[in-house]
Image (cartoon, rainbow, N blue to C red):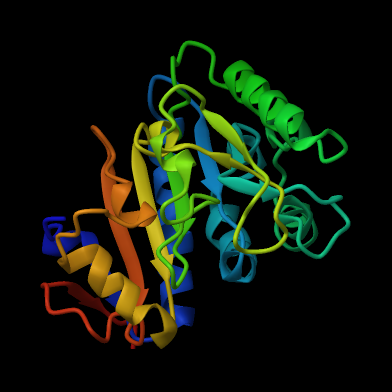
Length: 258
């Protein structure tokens, strides 16, 4: 992996400052897309610590645009655990409780899995919903995907050395043997991640420092899943806090609101 351009790695002094800047970037991208020919904004969300980060910052950042603008947002999920929405592991369930309940986005424009289906059918059903929402795209093109990265280098539910890294036909894939519980999940595939107009990876904490150095600096023969996210025509950005960026030697842009 060649190191990305320095202006695509942004390092913040704290997760709180990172979250505020991330929310502002989401709002700016939304405004830009809504002013464009498509007049809509398609956002893909990931779970984990991103839920609380976005719940804390995004409602205020998005509010100035007004309800009419938020009514033209389409929201999907980069992966999902096959559990009921009320379950503590449900990514959509957490966003519904903490974020979406505070944003006037129509329920019909929030694309979710059907957790009552078997995992193979749930993946097919989610793919069908995405194709309906992204009519005209051979592969769904999100305006912005916000991704996390695990200490093992996984992103979405794409894990190191897993056969799904070779998937080129499906836009959504089922996984029944996730090394991270729960084992049954539905995930976007690399063709969708790499079709996005903008992808932002978010990582915080020193527990991510070693894997970020591998992804951003090492040329590995068998790249980690997160290193395989290289948008074909879109922009790739990394939002890190100082702890996560602690081992990097490539240039990056330091941000501080203090």
